[in-house]
Image 1: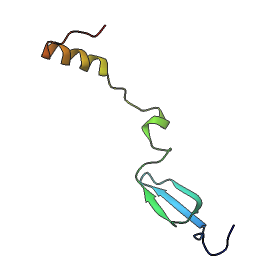
Image 2: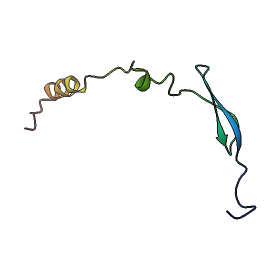
Image 3: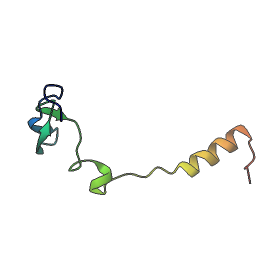
Length: 69
């Protein structure tokens, strides 16, 4: 690597709103995030699935559209 052209890479603490703290390295330094893998619904299994098929059918009935297939 060439000297003098790269930013300083230093230890950093990433703090989530849920209270989880991750120690890593960054050019940015310490910072906070709103959501992490500890509290994200996708990773915790608390994700709510939306019934989009029912919404599409309701839209088609309301506006008189026929199904495509």
